[in-house]
Length: 345
Image 1: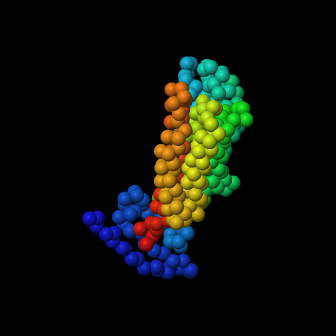
Image 2: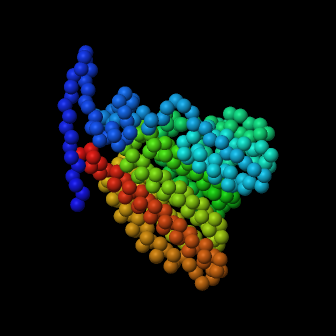
Image 3: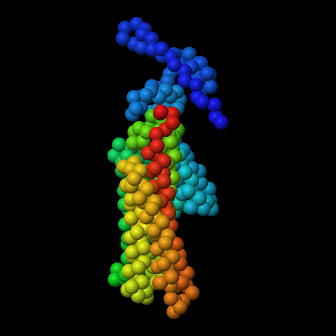
């Protein structure tokens, strides 16, 4: 059994004028390697408590810069992955030094930034490379608003993906897949915010959260929403191979998809509102989606289907079910976040 935390009460003392002081625990100062006259930030929390953070843990006005060196024959996907890694880490500027490498790398990186990232501006470009600046975006697009937009896009993808079965809109499958890039942009943008907030606790309130515990929960939620979009893209691709389904079968698949989407939408709403009752209802609906998969898959699969069509149908049903499961996971996180942090009790 863990030893209960000892409460250390200290008296508020008045110094000259209208100033008040409270001494800091010696063990805390020693553990952090602080010395006399070292500056600390005092941050007022939403519950009126104070958070004391060493200045070295606060982001300063000094801009951080990373440089990516390239070499002849370098894989372009490798370069883009590492560029995104620096973006997620929170660097303010990222320089890509092309040198004597394939000049087409510039175009590839430029297009990758456009498709995958939010808030990255190219401020210099030459034959020698690219210099980009990463904007924070906290004020214009706070975390919860960005997550809500990301979820709306993913939900729309899901609706349009199953709409491919109904036909009449050539190219819809490709449009759904293309929108997955937009979800990825929000995904990377949100991860960047959360990574910065974990390192700098003064940013947590700026992005609309209360504690580092919230950062962990939202990190899991953002990944689940990104996976929902991936499954929507898969559903669209599989639906394209099932264009000869009967009208009745299409109706059943559409109903199953609508149920999974309802679980997903409700889970996001419960998280943004921190509504535990709504979250519990979403979890209950997810179980209905699992039962519907067993029933609908048995009714839709037919002996006349080819092996490839059977495989596509099974993958489609699995993806629709997984959407409901991801929604249930998000609802569970919403419930977790409604519980008061024991340190705040």
